[in-house]
Structure formats: C-alpha cells, structure tokens
Image (cartoon, rainbow, N blue to C red; front, side, top):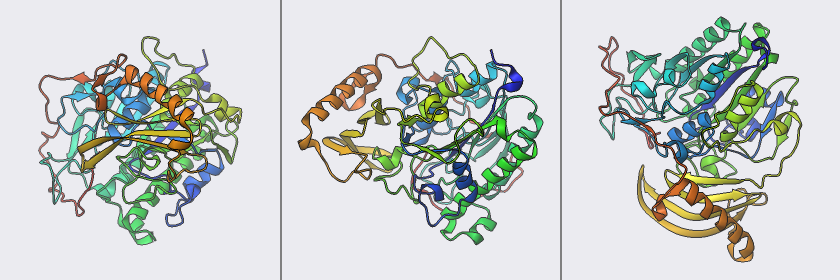
Length: 457
C-alpha cells in the first residue's frame, strides 16, 4: 500500500459542451486558450478520446463509475425533482479515493440526481459547491418547461436560488483555490465541473470584451483563465509535480466547433462523443506527447485507482481499463477494443480499430425522439474522421465482424431499438416521493436568463 503522503493529488476538470475543435491545441483559431495549450505542451494530448454518451448525465455517470451509462441505470438526461439518480451503491472515482485516504470535493455541475440520496456527498465527496444540474434548468425568460429556481448548493443545503451565472466561474475558481490550499499537505481529489459552455452562455463581461468569438469564445476563455489560476496555485504551493491534472469535456458542442468531426452534441457521429483530453503529471507523463490510442472516460476510474493504490470493486462490471501504458510508457496501444455508441438506450454504432459501423440513426426534435431507422454505414476513421465516405459495400467481412460485436453488446447492455434489455445492467437509485431542493426563501431577485436555450443537459 502506497504511503498516503506520496499519493498524487488529482484534479479532474470537466467542461460542459466544449467541442473537439474549441481549443487552440486541438485546432481552434478563434478561441484564445494559452493556459490549456500550455497544459497540453506539458503533458499528453489524446487524439482518440471518447466520452460514453453525447449528453451529460449519462456521460458523467460513466466517467465516474467506469461503466457504460446503461450498466449503471443512467442512459438519459436527468431533470430537476427526478425520482431517479446514480445509485449510492455504485462505486465512483470519488468514493474509491475517499476510502483510500483522499480529501474529496466537487465544484460545479453534478447532474446525477438532485434527491438527497443521490447528491455528491453520498458518492464519496467530502464537500460540494455547485448546481445539481444544467444551468438552463432554472427560471428562464423563455422557458420550455416550468422549472423551479436554479439552486446553488453547499454540500446538501441550498445556499442560494437563481445565482448570477456570470459570477459562477469566478466563485468556483475561488472555491477551488481554497480547497487546494486547505488540503495541499495531504492527498486530495478535486473534480471541477464547469458550467461553460452550456447554453445559455452567461459569462463575465471582462471575457466578453476580450473575446474574438463572441460570448461562446468568452466562455471558453473563462475556462482557460480558471485553469491558469488553478495551475498557478499548484506551483505556488509546491505541489504541481505531485498533482495529476486531467482536462476534458462531457460531450460535443452546440454552437462551438467539433471540427474536423461530423455531428454535435446529442448525436453519435464523432462530433458528439470524441472530445479533447489532456493529462499532465510532471516527470511521469512525457511532455508535449500525443497518443492515438483509443481511450475513453471509462478508463479514468481503473487508471486512477491503480495510480492511487486503491482497490477496485470486484462485485460489478467495470468497462474501462487501466491506460497506464499509454500515459507512462509512451506506448501506442492497439485500439482494437470495441467502443459502443449509445444515444440514451439506443445502440447506434460501434468502433473497433479504425473502423466504425453505424446501424441506427436517431432522428430528434429537441430532446424528443421522433424516429429511429436502421442504417448500414462503415467509415475508416483514420482516413475519414469526418465520416463522409460510406465503405459498407467494399468491406463486408469488416461489417460482419462489427455486427457480431454489436450483437454481443445488445445481450450485455440492451438496445431499445430492438426491445432488448441487458443482462448485466444495474438499476438506478430511486426515491418514492421526490422533493424539490429549492425551498429556500431567496434573498436575491429572480434572475432572468437573457438568452434562450436549444438543448437540455
């Protein structure tokens, strides 16, 4: 067992709806991201990194548990006052690290259930400061649903209603600095879940004034500023060399850039699920390195558990794998592993090696599915990352191999397009009588969002 004093700190920064092409180090020419670009130059940049869902609740559930969203019972976006959430019986990165002697905190967006039993403090976080779901799930000027006031929470208590969203990134960053300073002499895990760049994009005016890409670019640059503040704090405290920093996003963008990929959030094209991911750990992860190995957010839990010398659960399926060889040995692993693309409970596609086979296309109007229809589209993602040339007719043997993988996945996880229920899926947590969090008597005036929103989650 590793001495607690030598265990590395872990900072996981997860953005909301930040696209593959929104950062300078991933090709953006319109957003200024010098501190994130520096993070990439000081660590490894993953170029085949995937989240397990193109929308946020299932994406976050998978990232924290190391299991596909259907396996943990969270296939779709959760809404305020939902009767379900991530079961407290699930093991998460936070609960495993807490059991291993880490101090743990979540700052920002949770979105895995707002009932008391599902809150971050019931999943291994010692502290929580943030909003329990998306920033559009409050009082809006042109609401499409009648939501209660947006709650800002401190641990398990609503501390404010309808906080001024333009101030939240500053407040979150101050909170992060405070947590790091308070626990810099012991191992800590900080999960910083940004509200940006989710719509409505509400960002401090100083970033808007400096942006060359409107409010969207301002929000990206606010994230970059926050990353810089946190990195400077680690250096000031002399702990940056013993701190792993992971930077990524929960799903593809709407309104930003997913280039050179096709599609966006809420789709199983590459632009919905292939995201930036940067990992920095001085003297452990090679500087200015890059990996084309297929890596997913499912890999975070087993990899972090191994690094921190923490035990993984043995009573449940973990879909991720330890990617230590990619990070520390500069190995380019064969990416023949299968990765499955779900939109909610519909199995839409599979990737293995360079090949991706689409079998279902989901047509939507807003968040409502209006049609699922079968397709057969095969793409070579090495030569055609934007999925433009369908090679289905040219490689029947490859199609057959991928169809076998899909058939096995349907048995394991299920597929509502074929009315199949998975054999190895666990149930979400449930409560009999949902209770709204927003019972606080607000001292703030109701805050009307200036901008309408297109998507929830």
